[in-house]
Image (cartoon, rainbow over all chains, first blue to last red; front, side):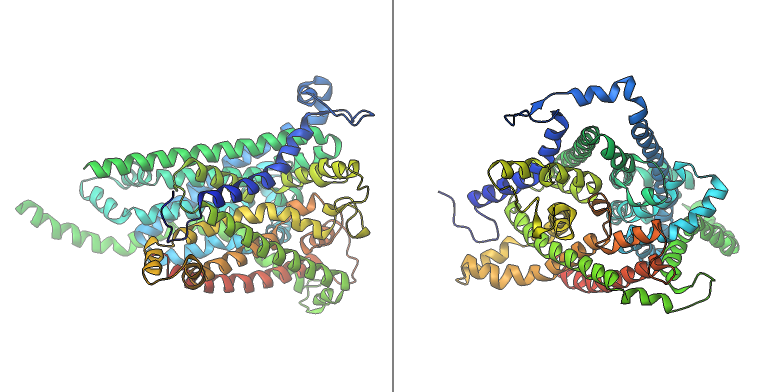
Length: 280
Length: 306
């Protein structure tokens, strides 16, 4: 018999019913997408559908190389854009956040405001402004896909900012840097071997969120006529919906797996540090 | 000890002399990020919103705002707000029920990590792929649609909604698909508030003779209300600005982001210039109203989160 309940917690039965119903409703379309990717041909006269891995083979069949070329090109482009966007986060955003924390704490609110703005401006609105800006960018850098990283870097700002800011709030960087400076460390040393290691968790999660946002970005790429993973998926969907379904399922599962691993890793980390704290 | 004491003033005076120059050197450290934000955030945002106020000769004009007099444009604006409002409210309620079900589970546990990861994937990554999933599920040849047809319902809700063809290729159908990223976003944003409910409040309620019903109506709901409505606003903004899912389901207009696509990819049909800019301006106005309301509610909600 369970103890009398005072607080907000639901009973075990209620919880199970709610979660099972939600799980079924949310897994259905994704399971159907996976099932769709395994369909072979049309259902026969009795309405029986054949299944197999035929469409997986199609992807690697040299005869189809031309059809799927945009997809592989799009994935490559997205990975390049990903790398440059991460660089923007690590080289532009991160040092600025640390600098503001150390030297200009009164600017913290302004920096936060600037970084949150992209959430309030829909991508489709920014696109209207990006089109004229990119006609100039194209003159300077050419119209290669990697230039898209500048625009996507802006979309990423709010997501990348938050984990680092949360981590910064929990670490007293001012005291840390003063301590290491008084022990004779150079500014480079302070940054590289004192501050950055303390922000590892925040930096790591903002990098992973950046990867997810870049790989999921569709709006800007499609209007600036660049071929990325998402625009390629949308394109292939027109000619070979099975293959785009395969890639969609794999992308979703991969993103889920990555987030799950980060989540488990950080909770294990928290668990051990708490245990250590209790021992001491 | 003495060495340290005598050395200290010396460094301080040397520091003071260099201070202003050093200070400006440190200021320089902010310029790369500032330049980036100005070039790729400030300028595009101003261009997007401002372009609606210029005619094709570059002269300032309010004339383009006439675009909002067009019944299609205005109707689509209303439809966008309606879809966003419906999915925000329904998504928030379903999401809150899920958060309720998750109360009392270990925050670091496997279940919560799975729910969090799945929510992040659906809320931030889904877009185009969700559109595919729904075409395969309840599209005209979708699995569930075909089941219904085989069960004898040749014209069912999915393939003949409102006597107007397939549900998900119409604006009301978008609401169904949008819920698949709205509910996860609600779970992500509302769970921290839900976890802020303290066990002691429940015990206080019980010692004062309250039931679980009074606990919810007199304590939990009033405390959660600002956070709940804040999340509703966030969800509204989320579906108001989403484009990828709709773009892969509907070929024409129907909601404002799709109207912007039409304006950007084809010639103007309304007799005024820069309609895309005008629509962008309209969207930003709504977003500003929504975000001001959000920050007001967020301030109230954070009171209980300490």
